[in-house]
Image 1 (tube, rainbow, N blue to C red):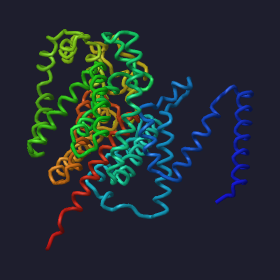
Image 2 (image 1 turned 30 degrees about the horizontal axis):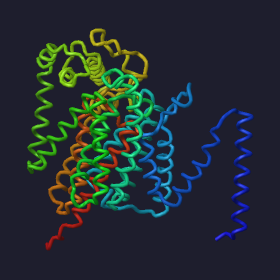
Image 3 (image 1 turned 60 degrees about the horizontal axis):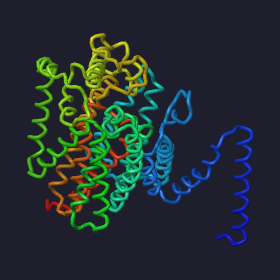
Image 4 (image 1 turned 180 degrees about the vertical axis):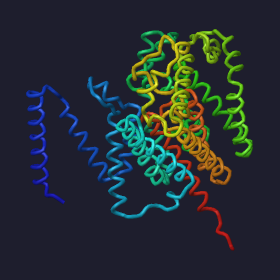
Length: 482
């Protein structure tokens, strides 16, 4: 331990050095970025001393993160600050720790979700190497890696302590509440009846109301579970109830029809799980429904074209506009993006165009009859609007298959673990994670945000919670006498 006098000398030396650097950069470059140096130093210190603290820091900053292009214009690349640099740092620390220990939890490495992830990431890497834009695809793949390392592989070790699950949800939701109040302050100035304003008032923290609504729906099941669970302390249940009310009102004012639909179907899945209906008939029913929609897509579209109801501040009218594929620009643009993805797949069915390249490649595949007033040829209006068709266009048939396989394995292991777990608190956490993930998987039919920190961080964290529960359930089972 340093002596008191040495500590004082060191403190003043560092302070003088910082002030001198600050003065120099202000005079020479007219920039205040050097003021970020103490924050960077604090983050590095936290990472070296407590990596779990850094994970919680990322959880808090995720709803508040900003794209770099909002801060510095004209850059040829983009990233979310401060989360993506922190996640990249966590990736390096993880690799360093792994090389130092030369071992990892074998049960985790061999878990069915992990095996499905290897297939998913492995095929993505192959198609990144065969991509029409290799640098874009490799950056996209690397971003997937640092999301997964931080909140899946490290997350599983982190969430073995149940208190950390509550801390993760509390910090993410606390920061999200700040975004909600920010959005409401802007919405109030424009009028809460203004549906168009609801599309952008959360910007720049969330790109639009769809990703904002998706995450509101994602956390509502967890907040509801904590509110209703009698064994949790009353003050925590009260805070969860207050957050639940805020999230519910914010979801209503988001006017995100996809988020409303996803939460409704999430509630149906909750009911099916509570009724103890087996996974296999549920999966077969869902698969049959998707197959029927695909086979009868023409008559279904013809039926939907009879609906010409536009988006409106009236909730009933707004809900009915969900199936308007005649004049609703948002719905029509989704059909445009989906048809582009299918035609891109037809041209490159084996390896696709490369992960992350859809937005740069889809423009020539647009048909005049599908273009809308919000269609564009520039790569600035999002992706394929589907977590399922996006991989189909970018990584071919196996790209979509690997994602669907991963989803099926996650839900199967989650529902199986829920049926085997006896501890009531573990059942609460597990069911909340399953329903939260379900809301996003439903939302994923209409939008795709898993390439952003806003969604990837909580999504893979909840997957980690499911795997933790599954592993603990296996360890609780009595050994065989054979």
